[in-house]
Structures are given as structure tokens and as C-alpha cells.
Image 1 (cartoon, rainbow, N blue to C red):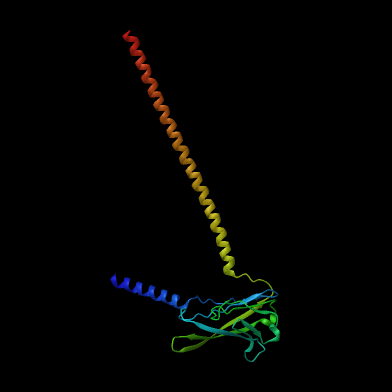
Image 2 (tube, one colour):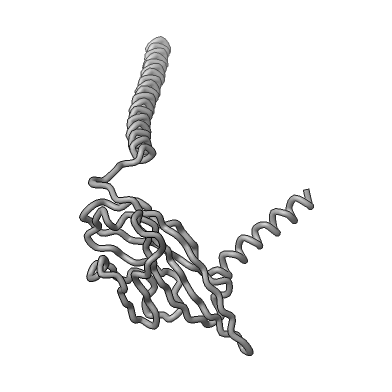
Length: 220
């Protein structure tokens, strides 16, 4: 048991340390956009030591089904953004970290999505960490495969979730009704029992009073 407690404590410490050092939580981007609507290309790059000062920059590249390789389409660094591909001119905007030179959330937002926007996107982040006597350079790449659909495609899991929610609500309502009926009957039965006890007590008192009166008359 002691060994198990030690292992659990060690695992908890490691998980806590990982979260504290990373300073953020990395999540996957959505991968399905709707034609004519906006879409967020999500990309989060956590660093290992958040207390260390750092600067970072990001480049987004795009590869459609007709492209042989990735093409640089966007860059963000030192609060400045630049678009390199005419297909995304006035349609690609920054949607990540603000008011900081160390970027954790490096997401971008596509306006007015078209079918031509479907393809593979690469998020490339360069980061420099400034220690007391040296600088450490690192980089990471993440990929988002985007599909474009003409209308909102509700996933089966979402539909099942809604059905289960309705079923749960109906079951809860039925259970509450049963409880209300049970409580009402219990209260009613308790009330009837109390009335019977009161009536019996009243009859007993009345009978005792009559006997007392009869005794008084005999004595006279």
C-alpha cells in the first residue's frame, strides 16, 4: 500500500510539473470548414519553461491537392503580419496570442472559406529562449488537414449526444413525477393516520368524561 501511494504521488507530481512547465495546453485544430463561412486554423506551441523569457515567430504554409510542395502563405513576427499568397489576400488574419513577443497560440483565421482552401496546412514555429549565459533555439511544425463542406455536417456522435440528453431529461422528469406521487401518498397516509389517532383520542376522552359524570350522579 505504501509503494502504491508513492507511485501515485510521483505520477501526480510529474503531471503537475509537466503542466506547470509547459504553461499552456496543446489542443488539436478543427479540420472541417463550411463553404462561405470563417474558419480558425488552430495551432498552439507550448514551451517547456514558461519563466524563461523568449521570442517566437510563426510561418503558415499551404499545400493544395494540385501543389507539389508547401507554399509559404503567411508570417507573423514582432506584431507584424505578412501574406505571401494572393489566394489569401485580405482573407487570412492573425487569431493567436496578442501583446507578447513569445507566441504560444499561433492560430490564424480564414475569412469566406472556399473549396480551394481545402488541403494541408503547416504551422512552423521558431522560438528563442534567453537564459543567463546563452540562447536556446528550437522549432516545431504542426499540420492541419482541412476539408471544406457545402453545409454544416453534424457528426453522428453529436446527434447521439443530443438524443441521449433528451432521453435523460425525460427519464429525470418521469422519476420526479413518481417521487412526487409517492411523497403525496405518503403524506396523505400520514395525515389520515393522524386523523384516526386524533379521533380515537377524542372518543377516549369523551368516554372518560361520560363515566366521570355518571359517577358524580351516583354519588349524589
